[in-house]
Amino acid sequence: MSETLPILYVPSPILRAKAKPVGPGDEDRVRALSAKMLATMYAAPGIGLAAPQVGELLRLVVIDIGPKEAPAPIVLVNPELVAQSRELAVREEGCLSLPNIFGDVQRPHQVKVRYQALDGSRREMEGEGLMSACLQHEIDHLNGVLFVDYLSALRRNMLLRRLAKELKMKAE
Ligand code: NI
Image 1 (cartoon, rainbow, N blue to C red):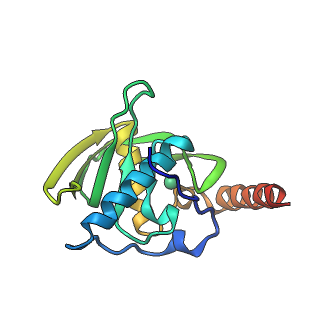
Image 2: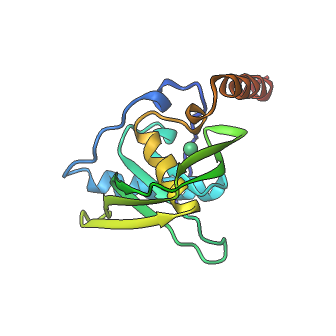
Image 3: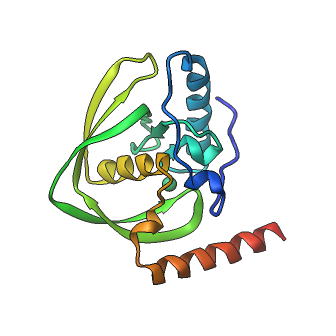
């Protein structure tokens, strides 16, 4: 099992920055980082984690929406949303960078994503329902977007105030 990494919380400015594409020559670094990210995600526990959440501004995402007894990790290097359904779905989302904060987010029900595997090979996958929401949520992280950005300003500010208070209490 790989070591785990500390997860950044809002309002870390890294969570609002745009991540850089993984380039040729980054393979070893990205392989090691993705193993640590998976370990961090499973330990949290969570179903998705983007590299900026562990302080690395790289376009790298790990996802596993499978049951605990049958892990099905997916590592997506340079993922890109290439198609989305017109049909929308509302789902309650949370985020490891906003602990104990949840909100209903409306997103396309189905998406198609292009990415590279760890060996650099080009891949494509389609997701619907939970997988669709997860793919969009994690790709958003690479662009500095958080799920609370889809909520009304009133609701977002209320949740962020509550989070700031909780994190302060935890730190004291
Ligand atoms: Ni998140």
